[in-house]
Image (cartoon, rainbow, N blue to C red; front, side, top):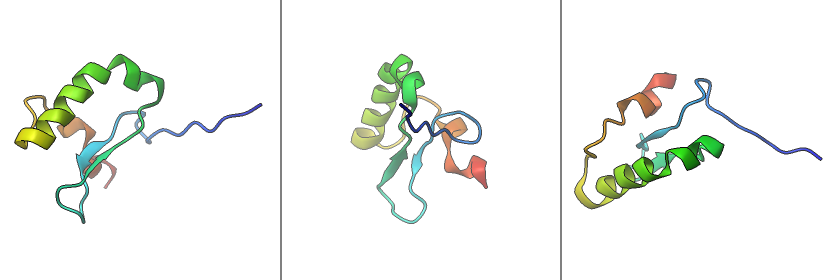
Length: 67
């Protein structure tokens, strides 16, 4: 049996606004690490949807780090 396991080059989450689609947020699947951080991720994403920027600094998860 096998399974597909994908990660970013830095093994971190990706949380950012889509560069070509304003208002669309890109969020990586996060694998098992996402479960450990799900409460903070949920809070940050809920704030982003309801209020705009999150109180939590999400800059380290931006798409720009790949460029």
